[in-house]
Length: 136
Image (cartoon, rainbow, N blue to C red; front, side, top):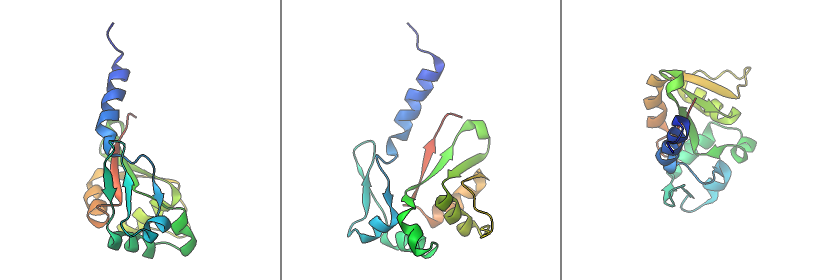
């Protein structure tokens, strides 16, 4: 019996997203590790640059380091045509600080940005951000 199109797409998205973490770690915890890393869904290990983790820490208040979980996920879907999303108050704060758009008076839980900004974010945070391909 033929599978439903959504089922096929979801299975393919799962395969494409094998590079995502099994579990994220807090920035504070990663800063304490000698070789900061996480396990990925495909069973491999992803290592973070210590200098990049320290840069992230410099963008946050001390207590926020416990609440920012790494890697920051940049969500991409065809539904948003030319846009991507960042979710989580602290992830949004970090991205906005990098882009120079952070407003201390406006706390956002989610941010939708044009895709042309992806290279700037990835250039600044190559090991602490990753893409997730999702079905809208």
